[in-house]
Amino acid sequence: MMGTATFARPVVPGSLLQHPAFVAFWLAEGASGFGFQMLSVAVGWQIYAVTGRAFDLGLIGLVQFVPSVLLALPSGHAADQFERRRIVLYGQIGELCAITLLAALTFLHGIHEGGILVLVMAIGIARAFEFPAGQSMLPALVPPALLPRAMAANASAGQAATIIGPALGGFLYVAGPGVVYAAAALLYLTSVVLMGRLRHAQAPARREPATMKTVLAGVHFIRQRPDVLGVISLDLFAVLLGGATALLPIFAKDILHTGPWGLGLLRAAPAAGALLMSLWLARHTMKRRVGMTMYAAVAAFGLATLVFALSKTLWLSLAALFALGAFDMVSVVIRGSLVQLETPDDMRGRVSAVNAVFIDTSSQLGEFESGILAAWVGAVHAAVLGGLGTLLVVGLWMLMFPTLRRRQELGG
Image (cartoon, rainbow, N blue to C red; front, side, top):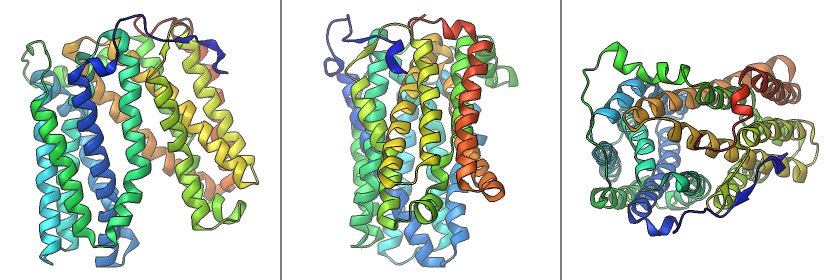
């Protein structure tokens, strides 16, 4: 499936390491990513220890999800109106303050459910503004030809944080949640220092009033660019239909007949595949037929979902999930690079915000869809339908977006 593209070392001189601004950005994003993953583990354990109610675990996700959706378009507009580095910096400072307060209240035994949720919501608000500004900064840190490798390197830091961060947070939780919060605060402080010292060139923002037209400009821009609309919507439906990972506890217990250790391996497999693929993509450049590579990667994602759905052995399920994560990373890098390269700098914040809403919302809805479908027809049939649906979407999108199918390079 992946033989449709040629990968080679970039023809531009230098490497990512020769761009100090990108290195500082990568280290800052990595530090805050590790801190956030450790924080997520501690918050879940602590709030369940305080209340003993599983419902409150759902509230943690809700108070983060609501700001990310409600503030997506305003935060994208802000990223195009003000200096993006400052928005990222102020967002991380806000997160650092909230985490430090969590640590202090925990050490002083003054923490309670409401306080935890309020501080987690504050972190969610800060992250809602930080994300589109950070995504829009990246193209200014490296030459256009190095952008796909830069996005893959940035994704590798995120995947490493996803794999190692929760384990490290769980290990430190033995000493108490306050210790985890303190460690996360130190990582965020490191990120703040790096971001504060980062220097990069950004064209002066064209100030526009926050009207409905300017806030929704990202939506209109995407609708007028068939290739951008194609990659975003293709990834959206693939994530929406391919939510089999939400059913992992059912597969682990009832189908693969394994225990918590097996469930842990199943959860780690997609992230491990994505991490290794992102490291490979960070060292190789896609040179041709990127449109067909995108379609092939999403189709392979659907096939991996089918293999996982029909597997009866743990090793085959792990291999399918590993492949699923790897192919998903290919589509993520192509989508992110193409969207950034096709978007003018003064629109990148709003387009990144719309992209984030589509992908984040589809991830949440995909898990909900998989759960509802599994309740109706069973986990295996739900996963099979998700894989077949993904393949059907790929076929339809190849007909609906022929220019994307024929696209040779990320830059046009």
